[in-house]
Structure formats: C-alpha cells, structure tokens
Image (cartoon, rainbow, N blue to C red; front, top):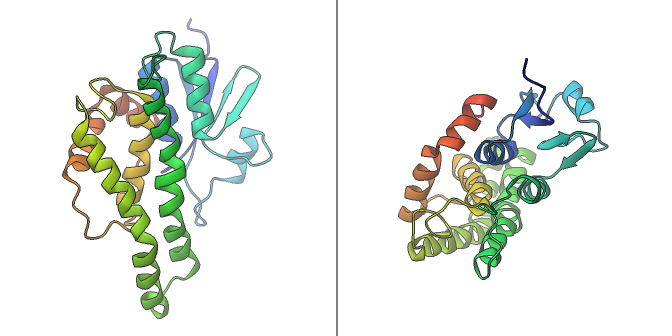
Length: 222
C-alpha cells in the first residue's frame, strides 16, 4: 500500500494554484489536491477556506507535514529550496540565478500588479452604462500592461533557447506563464497587441509534459 503524500495542494479553479501544481509535477513530488470551484462572487467556498486553516484562507496554499504556506512565490521558493536538489528550476550560478529571480518577481510585481486593477475595475463597474468609462480606464491602465508584454517579447527574442532563460525550463517560465495566460484570457489591457514570441512561448509551455500532467490532475481551466 502506498503512503499518503506529505504535501496537500489547496487548488482554487482558474488561479495561481496551477503554478504550484506545475512545480510539483516538474519536481516529481507526490501531492494530494483539495479542489474548489469559484463561487458566484469569484471566491473559494467557505468549506475550502476553512480546510486551508489560515486567517486569509488563500489559494494557492500547501501543507507539507505541519507547515502551511500561502502565496505562489513563497511556495515556489520553498519547493525549489527543499525538493529541487539539482537546482534545475532556480540555478545557483550567476547571472542565471539573478535573471530567474527577476522574472519570478516580475510575474507579480509587474504583470499582475499592472493588469489586475483593470479586472477589478470591470467588476466594480459592470453594465453598459459604464462602457465608456471602462474603455477609457482600460486604455490608460493598459499602457503598463503592454509595456510588460513588450519587455517579455524582446527578452524571449534574445533567449538562447525556447525558454525564458535559455534552453531549460526554470521557475521563471512557470511563474510568468500563468500571469500572461490570465491577462490574455481576461483581455486586461492587451487589445491590439501583437507579440509573436510570447504566443510561441505560450504554446511551447502548454506542451510541457509536466504542465499537462498538472492540468489533468487538477482540472485547471480559465
């Protein structure tokens, strides 16, 4: 009889939790999934939040034995430090390590922080009566989003391989991929953009075996 995996992943549909599942699959670390669809308000169920057992009840979260960790970047750091003994996903040598860490930070501090206000604005002001205001706000806030995508497009063009930081998959790809996928799917300031390198990279990432295993195991979709 196989033993129960030490790690439990609390997975909210259409969320950053896919990053964590992908990391676990890439590292070949066994894990169980506690899943929640989103409620009508776009949140996890009360039961799901209670199972996480923290004040915020946020997903992604993992339990590894007695330790509970929230926030996808903190989880990424923890998993790579504990389970990536070969340092494949976050290299130890410089400047490679610095570049990977830069993109991990940018996945939230650039891409998400610039795009999410557009989504929140749409949710706060629904309806046709706000259409003009929404369009104006999206155009103004979208400049920063397009700037992030232009940067990614340029850096992918410079890469020595099909990945963001060369010829090997790193945590940079795993973290940035969700941000880009989510922003494009929700049309958060990207209208009119044409980023061929980004589109190619996204298709390549979605073909990664570990990514496909993560999607299959969790039922992830946007």
